[in-house]
Image (cartoon, rainbow, N blue to C red):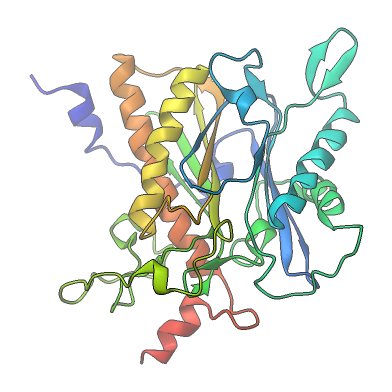
Length: 347
């Protein structure tokens, strides 16, 4: 007898109506940018507190509140997730989001007090151009509040939010998002700010590493590679490889009912999406991080382990697609050429 997991692998999974992480019901996203400093903030804001987990694979991460997401810890849900440029300066955006939520009565209840739980991750865009001479007042607290105010179902990709000052290997990086919906109503979405030391495009080709996962022309209609793929150049010879100077950070959301341990398993599986879209990934130079949010609107099917495996596989595919889409949607900025402009130069 054929297993239900085998059947599910061949079902018709399609992008949601927006092909954004906000196709997961109850999820909103807000972006804010500082056009002068070439940096920005992105917030993922669930309508209600969501079960959350995180998986960190890069060798140079920058995060806040990730220890609280361990399945053995007390707090079971979070109120938002923040992705920010600015390296450690950008962690202020998480504090600003926390203050914004607290002022609206949102947060973990301890007596009469409310303490919003807002994990965050940052990427390094301090050397990518723009005026970073902000003195004693970095823009990230302001940007964190503006991103909260801007949270909506529709939001910009590419040079938006945390993706404004990002780079991807030798190309301009950016903010990408996609979704996948099953016939049974399981919703999965991914949001990725791509600032990788590795490349998202195959060497000697014009197609993304993630080209096989494209849906609905979201990457401009990718063609398969022509001929064998040459070996990558040694990263040690690359001027782009600086310890702590790169990172790809993202969020996966789903409407599934998950506990913290199950959400962590999905986050672990979702990291494979980075490895499918970026080569190499999880290097000592990167801080690759994936958060998972589960809104709990749809119970997982039985057998539960098989359904969780399917969910993790869909999450990895969405992360790969969102990573490539962030680079595809980006526009040239300063000395960073966009993928679409680079393709034009190839003729």
